[in-house]
Image (cartoon, rainbow, N blue to C red):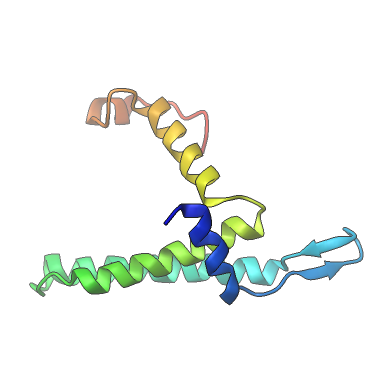
Length: 120
């Protein structure tokens, strides 16, 4: 499945945009964006918690649970991208371009310590 196809399918569980008299168009409310930002953070926390339990509490690895939680992270990321008029493919490409600029020869600690960000 392509990223943009996933994003389109995942829209079915998103809140609907609301008509704005000020902007004269459909917009996502700030509360919708906040809900999805909090959802993204919460789901990322669930991924972190599974790994924490594996590393520090000696739980067995649970790749099926990690898969589901990363899927939830992807849903919220796709929703935020949609709310800001972005596609997941645009987001992915911009991220790759940023990483290529930061680490043209792949990641290494020296480049990480010396890096100068031009993009957040």
